[in-house]
Length: 254
Length: 254
DNA sequence: CGTGCTATTTGGTCCGGGTCAATCGGCGCT
DNA sequence: AGCGCCGATTGACCCGGACCAAATAGCACG
Image (cartoon, rainbow over all chains, first blue to last red; front, side):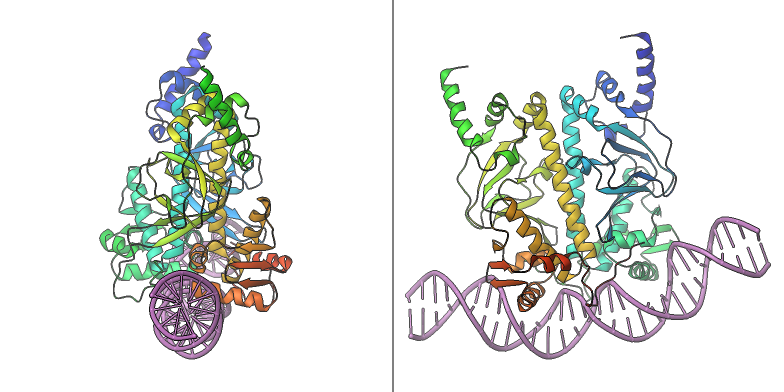
């Protein structure tokens, strides 16, 4: 190994070891020599601006992406132009894994604000997985986690009414922000009402009305994209669907 | 390697190489020596009867399962008892991958009819993945495919109305059956109306009504669980949502 | 500071599909 | 054959949330 490579590795160590999300996107037991391997396949780029595409549906699959800052929406469109947002992604989360099978992206990923990320060459990454056992498992775990999220979203859209979905959305967002070290109470939404509505399978009017109602009931306070959670307990209660009184949908429980 | 192991391998070769789904669950380029590796981690079992659990939510994750015959529903339940069917599985398909992250099953898998399967020890499997490059990629592809299915389901439930969902369901089922070598026209449903309804995010009455309407319009003929597709073209047309005349939901296309 | 643009909010109206209820029909059991 | 059971069908009613329309509010720009 040449000296220049050592220098490279040193830079790499800083960039990844010090990255604020490294323990999120790298397996715990990863050693320096493994990091060195991993770093070789990272492509660094400029940050994205609001509205920029991380990738587009139809593009050849080449990289998987780790979001370092900002936020990104993932959406899927069918041939009729029906559009469904599948998820919002925040720092430390991975995008692009669903493209592995078809070798091309089926979804598009769009920045909701200025966002930076790392891109990992997938073909190189999967070679390295052969050498680093922990990395392979991490890949599988990440995909499994992605599946779990979609499962929960399906359960929510399939069984919850509009009010419950909104409450669930707010509580989930709050908890994710908290885990990232931000305030769980004071949330800056990076997505529009339209995008929230689409994600939850509702219309923008319904989202707006329910947020107004939540504010009227002192559960939150809203000012455009700034939302303050004032009564998380009641919100959780509503989100769980155990909200008595309101003539809620009684779902089939076979 | 002892002679007895060779004999074992020979049996194995028959059981897997001749398995009617081997090219579905094994990567193309898998060589005999790889097969031998893989066979070591397969646990064989009795077939399941209708209503038997392949695995239950909460169980420790140990195996992933390849369905060999029959059909299985996968469902997810939340703490309130809301139940959502996430998918129906047919021969050649893989179950259990979503449990990798949390190391326990979050969903339950129930046989809809007599079904046989192979169980692969996951921990052993992931060791073998280190040795057999194709197998690792196959694993990732399978998970990716699973993600794609959930994405499509989300898009459908989020954007299609009841009639479109039913048409999509029938067309998709028909095409999957066809790929398995069965008739694309004459379908024997293994799931109840209740299960169809739940999967599609509808009620049993709506499913029943729409199937009656499809029959009245000569698109299908229904007799209990036997469905014959009489006009796949119109069904496809309906499923794609381009069904003019009916005052359908115009979704937001931002 | 007016003008236009877009996002959001709010007020009505309406309908798809959920809910409730009754009936039907196939199947197993005695 | 008669009975009970359970899944499926059909009808009647109603409501949550979509749809349409108008008002309001920021924000950008000349």
